[in-house]
Image 1: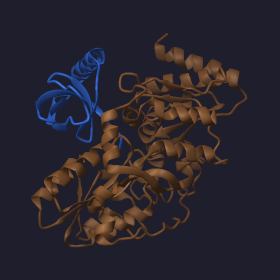
Image 2 (image 1 turned 135 degrees about the vertical axis):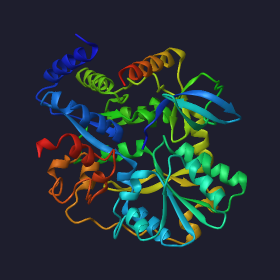
Image 3 (image 1 turned 45 degrees about the vertical axis):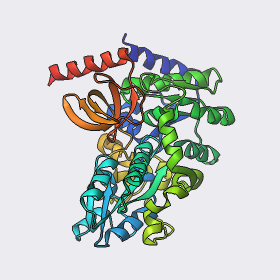
Length: 358
Length: 72
């Protein structure tokens, strides 16, 4: 019997112990969602163990208001929009950045925020606006880029500060009485930065076990077994499965960089609404890099998309199959909501790998 | 978006340098790490090294890369 087979057997035994359940575990991270969908882990889990997909796809939780602001900026001839790939396909209130590009806007997909800085250096006559979405994994790099722009005295590099913190979103989900979550499979690479200790207050205050897991199917299965073991023993601690990359402390140097450039401010999440202290907002010392302030753009409240239940999907309240648009009006080719757009969106992952259930 | 990949450090000048991801060389920034040396294995996310692997885990990564190379 392989190690993974042993964990699967243990999951079965623990599920019987926890029966009738149901036990509802949430994988917070979009990369976990894709790995679980692709490997078919849901199909081998006992009936009373459910894996819910969480709000861990940065593109998906970026509200329309931010997309609309980027599109408004893209319409200016002096602006170059720089963004990570998936963001261009997300439909805003009227259109997507991809559509804006087809209409002549200068929208460039980049691999690293440093590439955005390079574009700014090459085009001193234009203004580069980087959509700085992403969680704790991505934001130290974005922050370093802003620091470098300041050190170089670059006056044509700006960001839309759309970054988000994961632990406040986990708290918001637990505060929601409709979302019944028994434990969290915590994101691997966010935890490289924040460390497993970041989840201890959540585990303690809400009595929910947390396990930081890697992204391979075998690692996720072990992580699920670890969560069920804690639940069966009535424990609510924090454990690390992904030990080769994650420790309790995280990357202190990366967090110092975050602290120098950002503060945690209130921000809007698609589906979850405003969450206190959940956004990486620019400190006053870096206000000159704030694209919205520089161009005088205000974020307008997002309007609900007709029929799209992306918000409930992001909170783990419904599975994609329960949305009337899933696979019908909404497909990866013609997405209506961002959960279908992104490579790591829950609906996109279910559509690609678990469609037979529709 | 939080995708990160293991890479081997090939070249360092100041805080910047080059890493190899399964033989593909890409630019990387090492500002977030202490004491990175050529030959170390690091985790790369969006052009930034965010974690240095222990030697034992680095050997495991090399083994997996060799396995992939043999299969492809």
